[in-house]
Image (cartoon, helix red, strand yellow):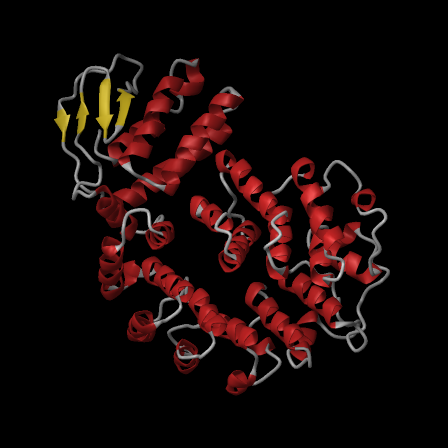
Length: 476
């Protein structure tokens, strides 16, 4: 996860950027990608502080609550959640997100006690709780919903639960599947309910384009936000066999910024040959900076599959000033892709990624800016190995490093004889190296594992993994 970039966007004070960052954070957690423990307190503090900002709008309030439910803790975050619930009683979706957050965060106390004195619709309470609490642990007496009588706010909340794939069977109708009801609600008279039906399909891997409640030929008749989700869904589901290129082309020229942004987000992890010239033309003429940044995200992530993308991304990155928002965003998008190394070279202002040679001498190894003790993997004293010149890592080397880091990480988790504090510290070095497999970070891993060799067999057993890492970056 691009944690530092996400946090900078949360702290930006701009509601559009805050919402986008909170959405990215929440989605990452839903998919099992979490913030590193060393960075978690800072992220929680940023999100909590945002809850008390008087300038945030309703959408940001909801996403603050969603994010707190994912990254927060009971002691620190419940006051922020209750602040938003009590100060915005006229916002049903904010209330629902707040209830969901309380149920998720209250691990040591009763969530009902935290919500005491606040009146809620019983169906809203149950639907909100379902976002984080298994259906088997809740009283579902108020479900299923009566779709024909339910308010749009309850329908939106139910579709949210379906999208998260946390709904009990037949949540929306006792006689019809949720997929059938999602399709029916796509034709709902409330445009936001219709939008949520599209969002549910986008998020839930069990739902597909066939569950849309309307013909794609009518896409231009829908509101901006619904078109945004539709374009995102079309881009996500695009394949070589069925690229939906006519709709993608339509989305690139859509007059609404929100609709174009949805398309750009959907293209993030999609590459189809036929899109390449369309994307290159689009990024050159896109007037909105946020949409253009999302297009660049797609270009950077897919640069390994397109020489045109790679050349364009390098030219743009090279032309940006150091520390610019676009550079930070592009570098974050490039993590664990081949172009990341080239961005690092440009950022260092030199053709040699390492910022210096690696010199292995008596007791000392200089790796870029790291001064690390030489590691003797066989338990003997490290000796002078002469001078080793290392050039830019190839993609194969990066893949080998990632493989060896994964093996070391597994070995650390299994090392029961290793003190917990040392294990946590070692894992933090490994995590940093996995996110940025530079010689500097890999060198820190090797150095620390070398120090663990003094802890009897606990450290000695890890030495082969460090040796393999050394070989991967050319120290063997």
